[in-house]
Length: 183
View 1: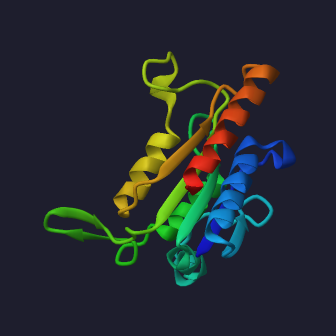
View 2 (view 1 turned 180 degrees about the vertical axis):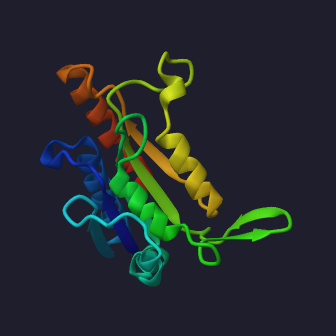
């Protein structure tokens, strides 16, 4: 099994999403008895924003297509995803490769791949919460991956900015879910 491990948090070792993605990858490797892991840190090695010339380089797309499982750390910045992660997504959403248009609408071509996303959010954005209308991270990623034929799985650490106790509790709860994902 090949795992593509994507991190996009600027918080370094303090990052909740990075802690969760590490745990997910570790659990998957234990369950699989090893496997190859390709790490793409979008902060230490950022991709430039998309240009026409960037379409000529298919290395990021090939890396995505070659992976069996993709584990993505996605912190919420200003109610959506980091621009680093958006630059990566721009390279994997390619007509004719990961989706196509038909008479019946778009068709995803990347199905059969497992995508697990570790969300890290400072507040609470679940249905019915006062900030629910501002949640544009999980909803965006669910839509984007659905568009290319993948139903992503999510692990969320929420309320991280509420206070130290809430942060610790939320990260602990999310880390506990990583064992379930590997089963």
